[in-house]
Length: 525
Image 1 (cartoon, rainbow, N blue to C red):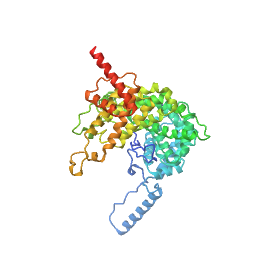
Image 2: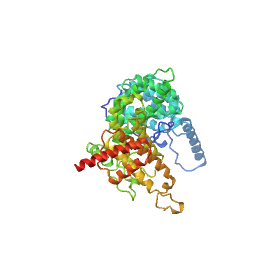
Image 3: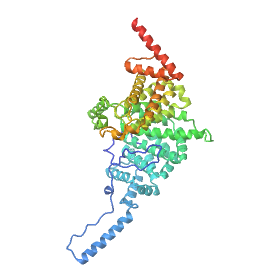
Image 4: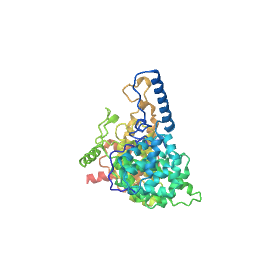
């Protein structure tokens, strides 16, 4: 196992880019950051002869050139320009490492080149044909304890898992899987990023028709004690946005795949450990919320974090600029929440899986406040320019998931959450009241032409969903704080509740009316 205190050498020359595949799709090859065919050592070239031109000299040069090309083709991996001899020699050097060995700079550079080359399907096939998975795993299990080496090898495994054969070899070997689980105890950021991606890549094959992967994974995951808790600790303790993003995506992929297995288990003889016992652990549930709130922090907080990191010798990453959200016509949102929208959907997916478990209802009182804090952050994000309007499939999914999660946590009331949800509804309502369908001739070239593609009914339906959620929260609330809610907004809210004939809206109106009457009487007293 790697030494947690070991220092990592410079930036990963084989670091993988951020174009990961969502868990629901088949895994694709992941690009490496600093590689190209030109960086791969080809078979050595002979110097061309620069003598005087002559018939015999030219014929000799042509013959030498042809021989050189033939040798290069014979050594090339498939149709690539990568040298198979270089790759195999590097892997052979890897297999010779012992626990007392040191990872020298030359071997590190060569391994990074192989890592870069492994984005090529032909290189992956060649490595698998030459038992590269066994060589890599046995090196991880028994070789030198160097976190830089582990980062490279786990990243290489991730690329190899683009092909299903590699995932088969890993998931069918309990020793290999146990080793991958144990690696979560090593808190080296670079290695853990690659490990989280490896988890995600393996799970990506499940939804492409390889259910046995999920069964094998489930068995190993439930057998290895604290596996889910270790994931939760990474989510709780890491301050790296890259690692938190990778860990959330991996958690989503694992939960989604294993939930499918649990459903099948109820109608089969698999006799697996219950899903709730494996995954509904405090460390994981808490870690998911902590990680999400960190990734959703505003730009001012991010800037403070980067300045603090710079003081400690870290290189600060640039803060995202306003981009398209800084359009005219909107009031400035300061501080702004800059977040990849995929992170929001990933969190909502994870939360939906966890809260729908029957066993989760017994512990919702413990988790509900943290979950609602995360949902509130999403509502604040939606209030920013160009995030709610025009209404698209993404925004509809957010609101639908929010309503479902809130229903599972018994419409937990929190003043800040209620206020922000009411603000989202108010903006939808005002947008509906001011809605105009643009004719093509009336569309100004400077206006947002996407608006005409969103029918008014879409806004009406979503505003109704939010209004119903607000009504349910009012009914369940023990006490209600209306401070800070504008008079116009409150009047529109009450009139909308009164206009609906459903009993839920009538009850909510009565609750709200009673609160207002009490406030009025207290004010007069």
